[in-house]
Amino acid sequence: MSPLAWWWATRGAVALGTLVLLGFAILGWIAPAVVWWLYRRNMPLQALHVPDISQGAGSTDLGYLVGLYDVRGADLVIRGQAPDADYWMIGLYDRWMLDVPAGHRNHHDITCDASARFEVVITARPAGHPNTLDAGRATRGMIMYRAVLPRAPIPTPEVAIVPRGGAGA
Image 1 (cartoon, rainbow, N blue to C red):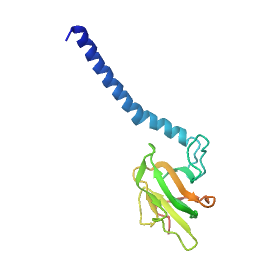
Image 2: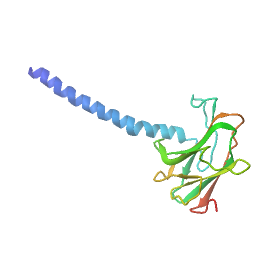
Image 3: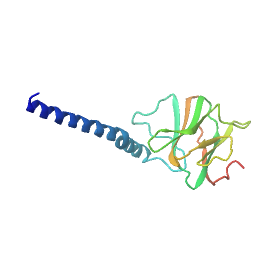
Image 4: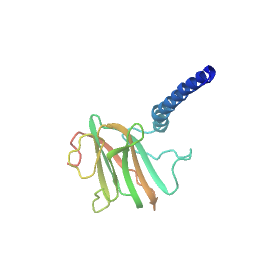
């Protein structure tokens, strides 16, 4: 190999490696942080609201309510009427918008009373409530309440902050 070809080959390998590392940094850290910031900048803390889907997110067959949670010092309790839909769920997502393990419940998992009302507890320290969403280490993040093929408008549940261990008693 000529010295000029060797020089270009080594510089090309270094440049390619640098581009790969830069790509991982952008896709792994920078892009999720920007998406999370853009998505949550208009979201309420400790409340649920209908998100703005004018930018193309969402679907007419789905109903969404979203909000931010923070359970570092207290638990959150979500109380509401189950939506009249084929499927519905409440889920937690961390600051990278990844689902939180043990942080999702759907209409099969959530216990409702005779009038189809439910109570879900979001906590970092589960204490035995039947409808617990365990935030684990993701003590701050996003709540998504979703209904698939709703037959009526989704009733907005109430969100209350309660002292740790005081929910569902």
